[in-house]
Amino acid sequence: MAPFAIAATLLTFALAACSTGGGAVLDTTASNGPATSLSMAGRWMFAAPNAPPCGVELRSRSGQAGDMTPDGGCPGSLYKARHWTLTDGVLTVASGDDEALAQLDSKGEHFEGRTADGLPLTLSRKPSR
Image (cartoon, rainbow, N blue to C red):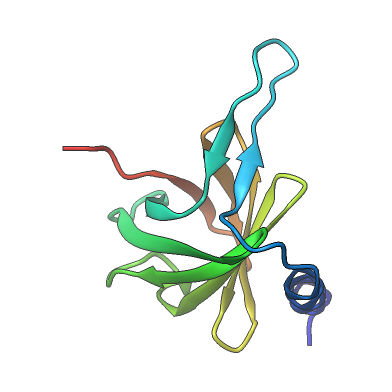
């Protein structure tokens, strides 16, 4: 198992063990602005270069972790995404087999990072109609 996958798996178990219930909320405190918080539960969109956007539903199951259900047509191997964990502003997306698929850093109200195979990726709220 790759070090990235091992770390993601251990992180998932650690977060599940210290569950506090309730929804995951990311503190998006900026050094030059007021503190805000971002609830992770809800509808989000993955976006990658040269790929159509992909909708994903995030659900909170314990503290800073939860489940996710991607729509079809997601870039790379994100169609396998089933779980997420959030630690210190870093969002890890994993498959049902706990294979780490992507890591993204918090950038205020969205996330930016890469898939495990290096594809640049963003995750942001789906715009309201």
